[in-house]
Image (cartoon, rainbow, N blue to C red; front, side):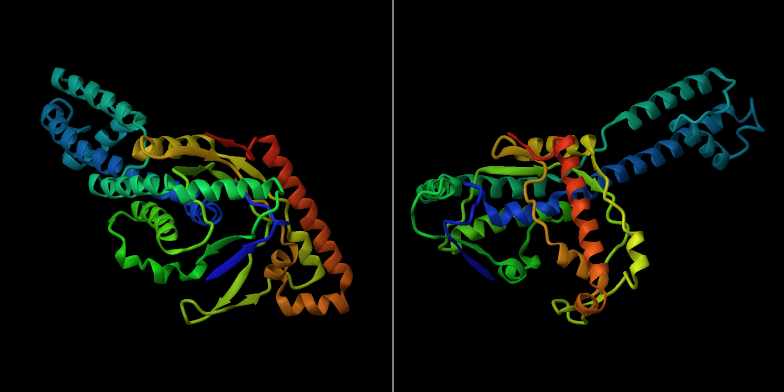
Length: 351
């Protein structure tokens, strides 16, 4: 557990539930969106399969006598139905019933493929997270929360006052809120539930200055192409054990494998996420859309993950130029990333 005393020289965003702001909402980024959307995609595929089989049976009996070579059996008719439903082309029916059926299947295929494949949560899970959202709103209305907001505002204005205390359990969350205590069944819903339960736990158990706000932050879906090399680690057999560095930069020439990241904002996925949470509990929590609001730079940390800790220490003596070149590349890379954030308007918050 980390307990930090926020001295006046430090700054913090007033009114933020910081433990959620920095780490917890990160789990609701692109991967979260993909996990939610995959459920709807699965339902769409199952529906298409059922429709294909049913329409194939009807078409076989309607067209077999008129076109025995095109509809010789049910499996061949299923292939026709799949082609028709997915609008990739099909043989024209000969009978009146077949033509009507083909038109209907064509229209059904277009309709289903045009349906939004946004995320969904079952009614039971929806009720659970909405109850938790109401509890968060109740906590946010506490008098102590208003007092803490004012303290943080004064702190940010550099006004004299006591040091503010912020508590973040970090790796202890798995003990404070064990996974088997979550009530939701769907994995995506369980992640939402965990976010809300953490905020409630902080308010009910920590005598600190953490602020709980009546809001839900939706992160813009941002794709980062990476730096060209992916760090590798040697993990402990213990689930929560330490790890070792497995260098991927072995020599100076390997620095040439590094690339400047390219940033792309997925506006469609962002809109899907925003609409999903607005429908889920937008009538309870204020839904805010945020881009990047936590900029920090740890170049040695980043480079050590690629080069290895011991190797970096040796380079400081044996090959300092390699280290200088790596730092210069990473610095310029981060500058370019920041410029891309600004160009794509990814640093603002929208209510």
